[in-house]
Length: 489
Ligand code: HEM
Image (cartoon, rainbow, N blue to C red; front, side):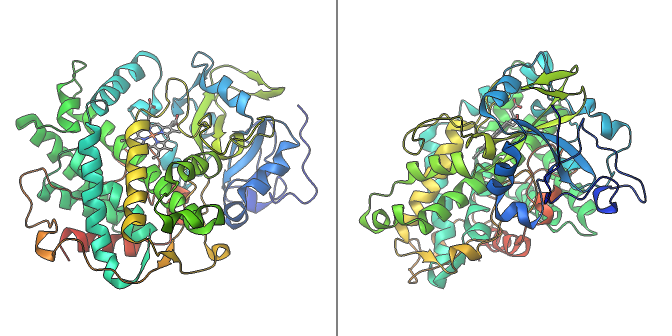
């Protein structure tokens, strides 16, 4: 396919210093064609669909820039994405095939590298190795009892709502959506208080991405290693122990890599599903009447988010194993391809009214790497949203919808914050009854869980890592909120 650059395309011409990550070097495109658009930055964050509308004129596989000096293909057609995702014999997940990275043509400090680089976990492996790791994860997640999960979410939600309720205002991203998945995962993975504290410290430090991030990373790695060691000695009814007991027998190192993947993949995406769902419910008149009336169409709102603002907006990165012609475009072996779920879910070739009850979107992926946590992830988000709106029915946005800002990275569809106000409410449970770090029993009470770190095992969508994380606006509040929760304040 011949690519032509749109006259007013926002990507600088090849050779422009802004286009290359290498000092003074001319930018040879890292894909077969020069990038047509940027999938990052303020313009893209404010209006991703505008970018994709322009790109559609060039086919369903289009060259884009995903960070300064980093080119990739974006798959923006629904059928084309299905072809890639369902053809593991032609398209690999293994980032060691990424030629531009191996050749040193990608800036080593590029913010997208941590979220694209190889780690020995289920996300970045193919074939038998993937089957083995995925079976451990999927089988263990499959043992989670939905009723117990619902209870964990409700208790975590109540704790957070009790904290923000008396204030009459909150940031529902930093003080609710980002924290609740951490509480839930902490419970699911059987993380006791002392280890949980390390995971919180480590995760918060990584969020801050400052000079201490190396140390934070070490603390997180130490916490995970301790969790694995503890569960080897004292297994319990938790996902960590079930993974260890799996007949595929993961080593300690393999366990740590999979745990980081699970926590990272889960926490970031879950946060965005909850928060984007709340945004829609609070800002769209179609839902407004129902909130106060008690019949909250939460499921409809979540479906709509999964179609239009999917938490993983552009991800599921694949590499052609050999040169491939894909819908008329030549994709060379080793060039990264992002599945643009936000674009392909809105492919004009898809007919019909998708809004209500239709779940044919690809927000969970499809094929061998489809999300193994669809059911629990959906349950967590549903309960999280319902609980908040049930306890604070008169909640409203504290700013105009047009003032809400989105993070600027290419991968996640994530708000910077979601400020709301409401008539203050009293805590549902007396302060003494609220779970606190000091008051919890052995390994069964909630405590925040980590997101993936750049090392030793980061590989998944990471709060605060990569381009998206760099643009995250609320790490301080997030950490403050976690610390308050942790100390029972
Ligand atoms: C809440 C919204 C969520 C969404 C929208 C979502 C979406 C996705 C997508 C699109 C993929 C495919 C990624 C790829 O191929 O690169 C994926 C994979 C994965 N997700 Fe989720 N996810 C969510 C929640 C979770 C949760 C809660 C967990 C863990 C408890 C989880 C664990 C995983 C894992 C382990 C993989 C890798 C599977 C593999 O490669 O075989 N996800 N998810």
